[in-house]
Image (tube, rainbow, N blue to C red):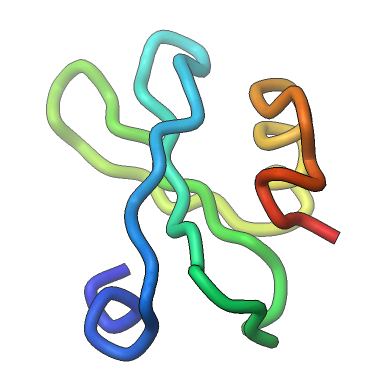
Length: 73
């Protein structure tokens, strides 16, 4: 995620709680072609797990009410 913060305009967005931990995603200010979205799960022990497709779609779908506003196509 650090390289995205350095290379693209955007911010880290909290998606909500997922299985007892916080779920986060990088929200790009402009449309980019980077592939599948990645979700970062912050566990209660401070460990961060990087989740990619297809599981990332399941997590985003369960937490984000308006996918158009979030920018997932």
